[in-house]
Image 1 (tube, rainbow, N blue to C red):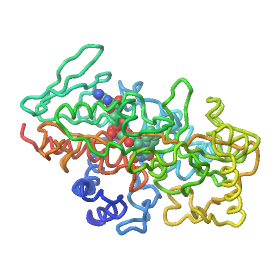
Image 2 (cartoon, rainbow, N blue to C red; image 1 turned 180 degrees about the vertical axis):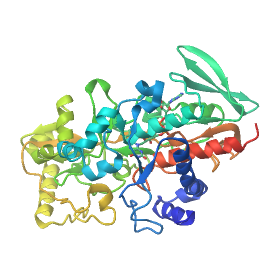
Image 3 (cartoon, rainbow, N blue to C red; image 1 turned 90 degrees about the horizontal axis):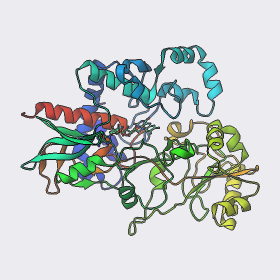
Image 4 (cartoon, protein in one colour; image 1 turned 90 degrees about the vertical axis):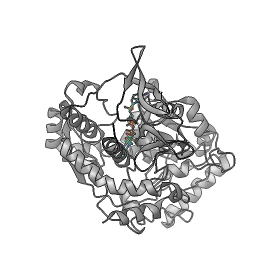
Length: 472
Ligand SMILES: Cc1cc2nc3c(=O)[nH]c(=O)nc-3n(C[C@H](O)[C@H](O)[C@H](O)COP(=O)(O)OP(=O)(O)OC[C@H]3O[C@@H](n4cnc5c(N)ncnc54)[C@H](O)[C@@H]3O)c2cc1C
């Protein structure tokens, strides 16, 4: 498919009003994404293969049943050389690649998945080969090292160095010392979102938030540095929003981004104890984060996942983390007690569960039709699986479902070359921004599974090319 087809898909899926401001960035993204992937395969040990996933909205013009989602093959951690020990261990195992995990579902069937692929698992265990994010980070780092890039750990960029309005370098901090680093051609800000900055988070995401999915340190430094250089910030209320699992009480609010709610006997209720969405829908995060247009406060929160004993039995991952985080999973012998423990209105909660159980008996979810996998079903819930089972066996279960923010997605507005702009549209010379730090052209509403890493890497590639083509 040519880039026109790809951009029509994005245009068809994006929320109203985004095309007016983002179209130029979308076009550049769809043109450069394949070039970025070829470049990465040429310059790093990473090799990508297509996953079996369709687009999230294959029925939209330009949508495809397969051919857009890629997953990196497993590679050895030791390729990161002197930096191997600095690669953060994942919260959930990366023994499988993303595509393998899609097929084997190890978070729900860890033992079965491990046994089915025993020789492969054993080999990876012995060689230190890993898939998913570990493969991506190790592969990119190896590519940088092989191409003489210098990598410095423990150095924090804090301010721009400005000469006549142009950014010519950064002031950085290391071991309590400040120094200047000059950049002849340009500086790319790619320091992630601002989710760990309490004030910024409270300002742009009012209301309850359960967990933060990125490691601490993404404090919005790109946003602060760009603002000091005169940048305009956009989409500051946008984020990658999911459900989440706390890892350890002493690490809170850090947690794993994980959609653990897709079980046939689980529903999500709002603060009034009522269902407000098809729990299996794509872009559930955007629905959970719906705001009042006037006050900007969340419409549904606090929200709760409600289920029963069968949910616990079918979710080893929930049982494991529940044992490590006492109190995270609320368990009660009756729905009345559950309502009491969660401060949900008892009558409404009882009515909601009774109504859902009736839908299960009839096989039709009259309110949200979640029995119908529709065109999006394969992506989000394993396609043909049963999606309606009653909530009726004690203990009854409630788990908070108030947004896990993987990364915010607002930041400095850039043009299609990745150059950071002022509010009057003029370019701040020497300053570029990529990834979730930029005013990302894809906000909370994703156009496909993983509408983050692909665009983030592409914007890094676009920025680097712009710099290479700029005059020194
Ligand atoms: C569990 C999990 C699973 C995910 N799965 C997927 C997936 O399958 N597909 C997908 O597309 N996306 C996925 N994501 C999202 C994706 O990982 C992120 O969107 C992406 O990593 C963001 O990329 P980035 O480079 O913009 O920022 P980051 O990856 O957050 O990198 C920013 C870096 O900048 C550093 N930094 C911060 N401040 C400074 C400073 N002042 N000076 C110097 N350095 C600084 C940080 O330490 C960090 O290393 C997942 C995320 C999580 C947590």
